[in-house]
Image (cartoon, rainbow, N blue to C red; front, side, top):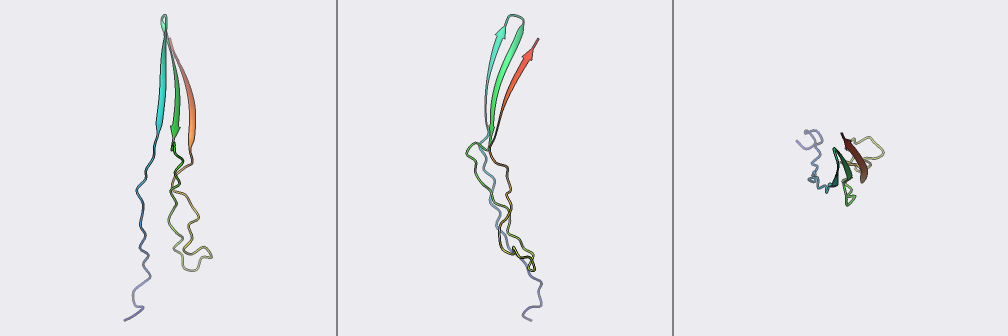
Length: 82
């Protein structure tokens, strides 16, 4: 019976590979402490595409229009302990 089975999509999902880096430096000042921190998430800015659109009636059928990760993010932090 050809065509008796519903449409089934076989999708290959790639494992996520991220490089997150954090650099911190602590300064001891008499009775207080100052910490400076720099962090980078997704350092190499790798793009991990989403799955293709699997709705047959969609105009974007078979196209990848989404991302599964966020772009590179950097942040600075300053912490003062007393």
